Image (tube, rainbow, N blue to C red):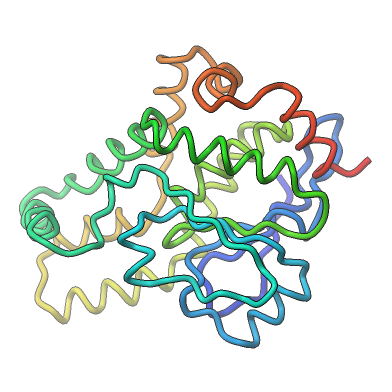
Length: 263
């Protein structure tokens, strides 16, 4: 696997270009076309200018309406914005009793976060809202003739990781490279997790809670495998899932390959 292309955008977590990976017929994915990041609510003017110069044309926000309301994207002039949430009922960032209930579980059960994330990845695959969003995202990708599309969730690892899975699969990237790209978020978010952990420790949280927070701030083979196994059990293959559940035709997939793979 070639190394992921990390963008020099310090005000945005986990910023990467999918360009450089090899897909069908050993053709490389084009640079400056497909960008994956965390949320861009705190993007600086300097980083905005870098993204514009890099060719940014569209931003797709995968977060729930509640998350978008709390930390709205900073809109960049001349860029089109789309809100296409994955599994809106999964949001736990909007406050209320559910968050406190979850925190109590995290203080008591070291594995509560792991189990919750596996349930969430399964829901993202089966949820109709997610499937509709996957469809609209891939249609936007297929219809983008030039310039870059940036898609993101909160930290650019889970929902963003699943969208990347579908795009890279369509482009013919081998499964192990897709997995390694997914897991690379752990490296990209090391400092983020460390800062959070120090804060939790200072706030007096116990070891089980802190262990859960490390899990929630990471990606895992277990999470990705939950989605892949769910797809295999319910649909037989990723190709069938794309056609039957997401509604992406072979023609749309060909359009994506023709537009994003070098000749």
